[in-house]
Length: 250
Image (cartoon, rainbow, N blue to C red):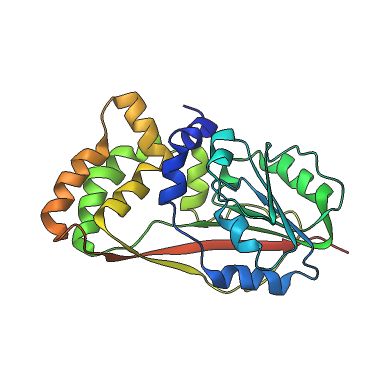
């Protein structure tokens, strides 16, 4: 199962179940950008980041390699969606003030993508990348998730996912890095079914199901129901954001 296939599969579920990024992140991006005319959200998925960018930029181009993801993207008058690989686009040279990649750069050919960013980004423009880390939840719940899901699916993560697990520390940014950015965190209140729906969007879960012919989420759900309490009761889930940004020279 290819990377593109994992995110094309059940793309409506992806659109409903992936958490939103904090508003503070986009405010910070607007503050470090010198101009706010046009932004490109690459590998936009369902358009979550693109929609947030419309609060600060006059127009947003949002691309994804998956046509299914684009079909389920959040519509907005400032956003133009299109299907395109990250590494080769039809955009004009030096046409963007900001390029963002949310939870996706680990899937790219990063050398070719950085070449494309250098082509389409204006002088002084910003490239920002981020991903969220493994979530935190009540210890007794996490223990079951570790035993019934994280350990069984570990070998089904693609190599790119290891970059996420390493906090994007090994990615060499193409321009001068923005030093000491703020620390961002996602904090969500999820009911049991919302947590399970999110776990179902993981690429390793989808690969596990295809290869093992068994759904690990079903077993996990039965175990979690015994300790969650009322399934409609929300519990706090926290996810650290791994964020890096760099500025193209003038």
